Image 1 (tube, rainbow, N blue to C red):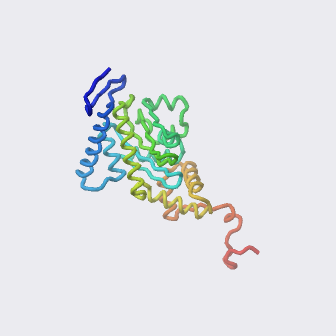
Image 2 (cartoon, rainbow, N blue to C red):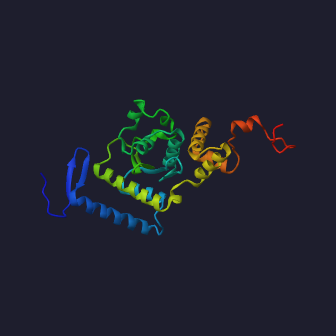
Length: 261
């Protein structure tokens, strides 16, 4: 049994890494908080979702980090350290399944040390079709949850198979809390403006709520084989319109202003 003096940091070894216990954990999290503040200040700007992803990647020594925001199906956004991660996150929003989606729905971390093995087992069949997925060997997703409110998930990925160390997992959980704080204090900064605006426009066009509108937007993107954000761009630019059934059955009459006889 390990012994420690009050306030001392105790590091225990496990089969897959090390983790900090007791008062040492509090000290570690305090150090991590200071590190985030210093790294943010070094960039000369306030902490943003994209910068948070960069800090996660650097601190955890992973190949990429991604943040998916889905607040009770009412606000949506994706942020990442690179284009590959961004497209992967958008694909999850489009098909509605994957490690980050599962973490958000269950409020539990989803740890996938061997993604190919998980996909081969039949898990997330739609997610398996994500563009660029072949380069990613392992994924680890951490929920952003406050009580019964699901805000989204933070994910990290690597190009090699293997577990994420317990210490890295603990840090990832803390980063997810930082993202939650950012979302609560500045909700607009985390949501994708285009997807959010497009969802609102589709809701008006279909005469439905934002949850159903987002489902329709996702279904259309999946059916067309497009990235969700690309379809959202076209909706906002009014290149794509979602029409309800009544609009198709009763087209507007230019002479009567749309009134039916």
